[in-house]
Length: 364
Image (cartoon, rainbow, N blue to C red):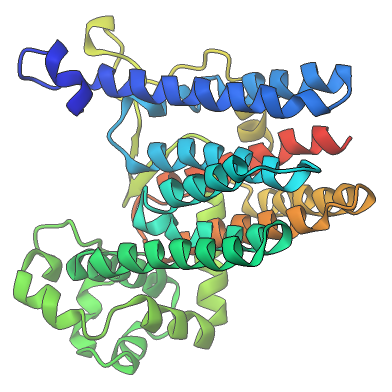
């Protein structure tokens, strides 16, 4: 935004942000091409081509023209993944390789607090390749950045997320919502809020004092204990999240109303929330096969990771498969702690699955 000020008349044009994001993606793609030089000739063409085919369509590019922090996380994930692959795959690495990997981890984990935890498994890469000084220094830096991100997040922000995850997402699946609310230490009379999110006018989250009070009962820790003690509810919540993610395109559903990200300017004359399908064959195929089929989509996800493990074992790269599998699993589970706009929160999970599909070509 600051870089665009000299070129604007005082009003921010979101297209400048889109241009910056597009430039970052092109830089990441150039990094991918350089990394692919070690592959066989046909793979040097197939792997970058698969990335263009999967990630340059209407399911991904329109994200560049948005204020969602998920876009920054998506782009910085590319930088982190490519930098760490370079660190792990090259026989000889330089100091700059370590610096690039550490920088990639830091910009990724600080892009959005919900995605901070995804960067922590990358610490293992330093312990597998670098000397003692780099191992300790990189670990301290990544962990310290994570602590800062968690510590500086406003308390009310986490309370609202936990409220949505419990009242809007979880309690509608429970057999005894009033009993579960009482078990968490809250007034059973709050059952009137079950099935409602925090952004409604009559929500207690609209009152700052009430938000502070409920913050004593609503947290990631309390939700974790609730899911562990109510595995049926946790399973249903996760299934519903996979159903949202299986649609590929971002959707937010509140009651019977569905909201979608539109891809057109108003001047085009398209109706609100109209979506383009330009060069979107891959995501369109996935939506046709897996859309609203959460169990099938879960099997597909598990199948991709299983294939990654199998092929990486043959190539003696099981560490890469292990670290990546943990990151994908975290991306799927963390969505259970923020109950509204699930489709958007699973954007990174879907992107990581598509990265996995492209990465399998490297091993093949």
